[in-house]
Amino acid sequence: MEKIVLFNGVNLDGWKGRTEDGKPGWRVENGILTVEPHTRSIYTEYEFGDAHLHVEFLTPRIPGRTGQNRSNSGVYVHGCYEIQVLESYGVEEPLDNECGGIYSQYAPLTIASNPPEEWQVYDIIVRAPRFNQYDEVSENGRMTVIMNGQVIHNNIELPRACPGGISNKRVRKGPLLLQDHGDEVSFRNIWVMPLE
Image (cartoon, rainbow, N blue to C red; front, side, top):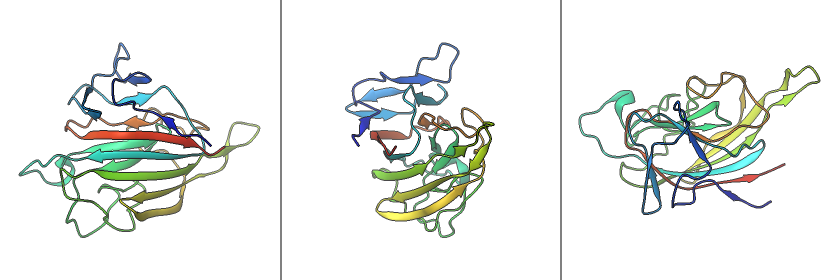
């Protein structure tokens, strides 16, 4: 299979914003895509099912912030399963709302975060849910997540969508959504390789 580049490093061609006009409001500079706070989340026009997704991200250092205010964002696979992005370096207890957590569902196996202002990598292998003839989910989707070279989710089952995505329904195919949570998190080298 051939990988498909989702962010070309030059502009936001192939992306939409969750705004009234549908235009993405994030900024692109020197091959890096950065949240422009309070311009809403953005998502790809391209949709995928079973796939290997690669995303690199950088959380800024924001002194004095705690909890969910530490450089918050998210990577939504299929537009509905959120892998949390947060400045979690040094956190001892893995939780579903720390970096690498499947928000509201699964804590990561370990905190694999690099320090803030260092690039980090998610490699995500997703198997989309299967549907029967009545358009009902007959088999839950599954996901493996490797963060900075460490397995943080191993073939976990995805019984429901996470809050805050494009839809609360699971889908055969969906986009990649990057979340605007009000912090200037940056992204680069975003691609997907279909596995169907």
